[in-house]
Structure formats: C-alpha cells, structure tokens
Image (cartoon, rainbow, N blue to C red; front, side, top):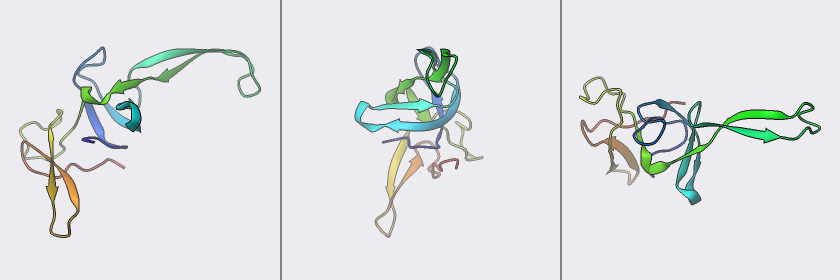
Length: 111
C-alpha cells in the first residue's frame, strides 16, 4: 500500500478533490480509506440504549485508495504540501521504507 494509518493525504479525485486530511482507517480488503472530516454522510439511526434520541448522525464514508496520495513534508521538495507518488527503498538491514518519487525524502506518518 502506498498509504497507511495516520498519514497526511491529499484527495486527487471525486467530490472531495483538493482537500487534505489524516487517515483514520485503512480497509485493505476493499482498497479504501477513511479520512477524518472528509466524505461525510448521514446515518439515520433508530433510538437505542446508546442513543436515546435517534436521528441523523454524520460520519465519514470511505474513499477509494487510488484517489489519495500522501503529502511530502520535506522543505526542499518542489511538491511541498501536495500529493506525491511514492517509491519503495530497501535499506541495508533489508527494511523497506516509502520515499517521495520527486525528491527522495522519506514519507513519515504523522502520529
């Protein structure tokens, strides 16, 4: 996957194109992600023990993973603040890291 949980991402296509947010959850089996504060939908709920009143609850819906790109936060990257493509780089100790395809700096998750 080119994105993971807690990544800061930019949405490239769809109704939320041009907006940025932090990934809350990655749905690997469906190839979708849920981004905090984006793609909001209303869920109509009946009254229950948890929610005495019921009504409409606003929550985030998933977005296709192909429509998001991680944001490179390197100061010397020419695409600073915008979505970038990523590459995998293998280190000496056989670990893989994600790097920006434009400047080569490491993509770090915002914890």
